[in-house]
Length: 71
Image (cartoon, rainbow, N blue to C red; front, side, top):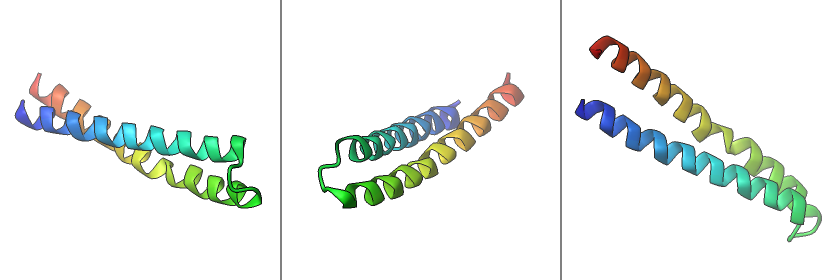
């Protein structure tokens, strides 16, 4: 049970980091605070946002497997 609690904290951290990075990428693409460079930086940030989101997805799958085995 303690393992699930720790994985839940990790999941929440990864999900929030990914969503905030995604939001930052969208903001750079929409508002263009750096001019033309915002487009390229926004695309890179947007692409990098999927790394923590993918890790969160994998953590959620592991949590589901542990919960089904334990329950």
